[in-house]
Length: 343
Image: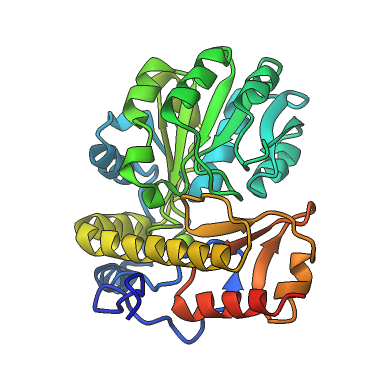
């Protein structure tokens, strides 16, 4: 067995038949919910006739205790996207500017349009990383600036000192949306200390989700944490009964099953490294990504002509780059076989 071949055991359930193993465009977790989470959700269905909490106080308290911040420093939303929209509605007015990289997570240009904001698009550098100097310059004219770490779609991360220099350069009246949707896939040595950041920079909101590593994308659970001044504005916009009861059950069960969760994360990270290694051995440039996907910059042969005939659903970008979600070994083999057939 290859040293990076995932081992399927009781903590890594087989893929359900309803899941398309060739759907590699949305960065979904390829595995079903952990057994303990599944059992907890099944048990919770008997209470589906009852309303959830008016505001998600218990879920906020649970998450705050886990990340070791005060309860009122946490806000909850329907996925990280919901929290991002709460932020934009809370701190911007139509016509204000929002600065972000390009390319970036598909949602941010959409959110800007929904909030009637003017986007300032800052190209990535040649290595697929943020141009932090240019992004800081753009932030001077913006109400909000977005920093994705790891970046979506390239998976790159900037060093902690570089991020701190960036935050020092951003005006304190510009809100920094630090999107850490893929933080669980980042090795500890490359992670930022979120608690220290929000203490030093009260204009930073750290954004996280249970959709990726936790495999709960269908339940739409996201959260943000920051200074009480910032989170207080968002909490006042919390939609009553807007977070369903299953969210609390699923998060609590996921926290209790931390060891099994970490094993799954290691499996996916190992598969990412294996896929990247094999692609590089085939002469394909792959960015040094830290999430649950790999990114291939534009190449001589359009990637659409490589993956579409193979029936692989990957995320194509206007410039010709492509993002491929890391799935199981079967999916990896399908990707490698398609690339091997390129002209």
